[in-house]
Amino acid sequence: AGRLVRLIEGAEGVTALPAYDVELFFDGNSKFSALKRDLAAAADTIDLQYFMWSQDRLTTEITDILIERIAAGVEVRLLYDVVGSLIFRKDEVRRLRAAGAKVRVVWSGAGKLFYRDHRKIVVIDGTLGYTGGLNVGLRYVDGVRRHPGWRDTHVRFKGPAVADLQKLFAIFWLEVTGEDLFTERFFPAEYPETGRASLAQVVSTAADEPWEPARRAYVATMSEATERLWIQSPDYVPNPEAHAALVAAALSGLDVRLMITGWTDRPVYNWATEWYLASLLDAGVVIHRQREGCMHAKTLTVDDYLVVVGSMNLDVRSLSMHKEVAVWFYDPAVVAENEAAFLRDMEGCSVVTREMVESWPWPRRLRNAAARLVSTLM
Image (cartoon, rainbow, N blue to C red; front, side):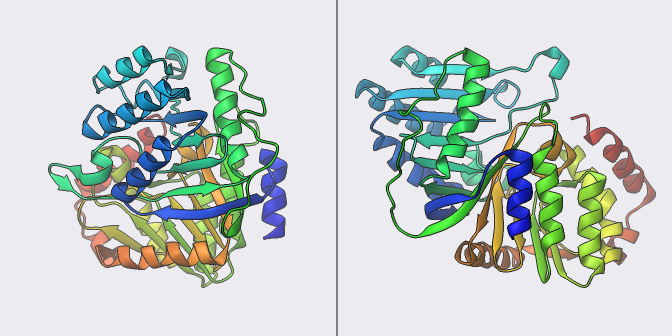
């Protein structure tokens, strides 16, 4: 893993740092229960950055906690994406503002309409961080009416690695508001050593980053595998390098598995994903497709020593264009926990076969080919 750590450090400028008490969440209930407890215990600052900030009972509960903390003297900042949150009423956002929270809507301008802030970041008191695939809303707990059930992965951790999450928020906050958060209040000189330590690197991407660190890191990570490579992503619309790396791993005889969703609220991506399945199957990739609900987790597991958890789908926009974040955890214990979840998820999936793909009628194949062409624009 040393070469991979150095590559990420060179492309991203972040070194591997200790992360204490790493806790994985595999559903919305567990993540939001923990988050609400942590928000209620905040003593000084709360920074939140989400692609989607919904308007429902969960948002109301979180807003109530944030308002109570503001009344106790805690500074609260919220960034949310204008497109991701467009369809929702803003009653809770207005309540937050009225209580004294600093709220900003992320809008990249008409010229960058398709460049989204897809990150999910929470940093509390500069020492505790959350990131992963879960936005704020009840759909991320229960799914939607016609497709109940939502499977996702999120992570909570403490310690020095949190500083790199805080840095991402602080840089973007400075761009949007002009307010400088680079002080010891947000970046403590020391972090309490609590619980078990894991080694972690925080990797981000955005359209204006010249080295495309997430793309480079993902491709290099897949190339590091010597035994197995297990991936979860709701869709699979990769850039050529990522696709080639995955195919090469399978052709080399590695245990390569890709788990995708059966349903998504972005059908074009689902159709584009289907375009790639034949070539993956020919290379020897085992493809698991969830039968019910939405499989929204974004994880990458390499052998028994590395797991990646974050907001990045395995598609070209996530790896090169959107603002995204993921954490590389070099820790066999964290890997084992995520692998156990993957194996449980397989029970709710069907294996996609070459015969199944070949049986699709030509209109479906044509639709999939067209979807692949337009998916990079959405």
